[in-house]
Length: 137
Image 1 (cartoon, rainbow, N blue to C red):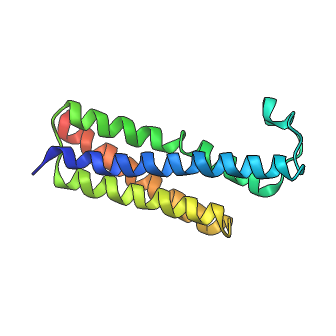
Image 2 (cartoon, one colour; image 1 turned 60 degrees about the horizontal axis):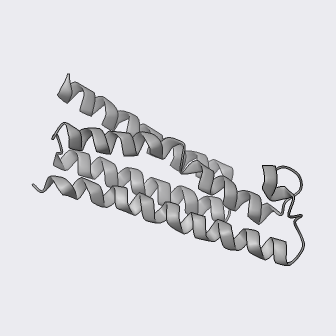
């Protein structure tokens, strides 16, 4: 098995994050151009902002929370030279859960569905970490 295949889900996560940076930028610029947001908002990100700006920003911020554990595990598995088919499956399941989470948040933002997808992705990551630690220790 090609161990570098574990990088494909990580690249997919990076693409999602880059997409969200671009989306956030255009959402901010649109709100500023339409004068529905004060430019001073961007100094500290406090104050009134349209919902779509807040949701866009929060969705981007989410990519630097739980996914950090994903990136660290991916790098650790590569460093230990312990990439398995199961690791690649776990990685893709987690990535799909993050894409679904973002899709829900940016569209309906229905919290019960978003929470289910988030919890599922978190559990996948926790189980994956446990499997890795059992195999390494």
